[in-house]
Amino acid sequence: MNLEDLIKEAEDICSFKLEEIREIKKRNELKVLSAFRSAGIDEYVVSFVGTGYGYNDRGREALEDVFSLSFSSESAIVIPQIISGTHAISSALFALLRPKDRILSVTGPVYDTLRRVINSLSKWGIEYQEIPFEYREDAEYIKSKINTPPKIIFIQRSCGYNWSRKSLTISDIANIVSNVRDIFEESIIFVDNCYGEFVEDREPIEVGADIIVGSLIKGVGGNLAPTGAYIAGKREIIDKIGDFITAPGQGRDIGPTLGIQRAMLQGLLFAPHFIGESLEGLTMASYILEKLGFEVLPKWYEPRGDGVQRIILRDREKLIRFLQGIQNFCPVNSMYTIEPQELPGYSDPVILAGGGFVQGSTGEFSADGILKPPYVAFIQGGYSHNQVIVGIISSIEKILEEGK
Image 1 (spheres, rainbow, N blue to C red):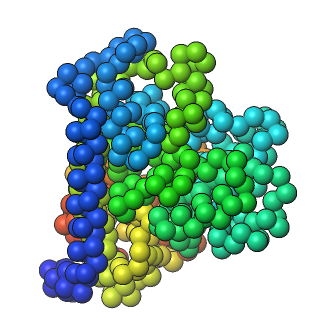
Image 2 (image 1 turned 30 degrees about the vertical axis):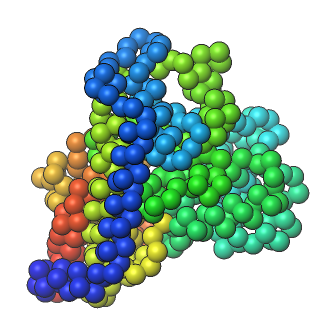
């Protein structure tokens, strides 16, 4: 197997798909640049160091403005005190729900760590119900199963660890939103947008979602944000969440950025480029892996709703060896051999490959998998398509060589 020949073949066969990704990347780069210009970002905002309570923190105000404009929302919360996508989702749910309210997931079961949040909400008398993923756009089925209008309709864009589940494109989300809006006019439509940012040239707010949430270290932070998450959507909703995150009466008027907004802003500016590079690499790798006989989701020519590539390895040791190979192609911690471990919120051991400049950053090129059948590797991120392709194919080569 000649790696260079495979890459050249993939470039030729996948050329129309790669061109489509580059066009989306260009549009998103220009959209984010326009957001910076419209928000009037200047040197003072970039270098401002807010401390203490963070009153009149120019960095926080700039982050809110630029993220709102980039995601076509009325308002946004973007502060370093929110440390992950799950933290942002949990904060939003606890802020918006009250006893006897109900969450309806129309995209099937939520992922493991969010299940813990749902279980905690249930202790407050908040109900949870889910629609099987295959019925997500079936308005008649949804009406037949739901008697009481839910307060929140939850849509998970990425597949999570549900390896066989399709990730949702913006068109898919538009169809879901249209259907559930016809049934439940007053419900808040809430989209977990993690891994989906800038994969297409529209975001869920633009097709009717009321609120979207995501992590800055899963791509939209452009591999520069050291921590953080965003919550964007309708102003009234965002204000309620702000009161919960800090305190009623103080809400979004406090929260120091500590100078971290420089990396967050610069990361957002670079995010469309890095995400586009990753998607090019994942697309070509999908073609090459399928040609080598591996099962992949999505296939190289299929529409992508998120920036995650799945490889179904169907063997415990192959999954471990593959992820150890990915670790070897990370810029940081490449010399270490990773092993499966028990992690809070997960029912089975997990193996995580990744080494970047931010702890836990999946946007910098990473992969992970749960140690249970069918032993699927989930790959995401990357600084360049070259890093992604060579890292994946070299890791697969090791598996093939050991199998001879």
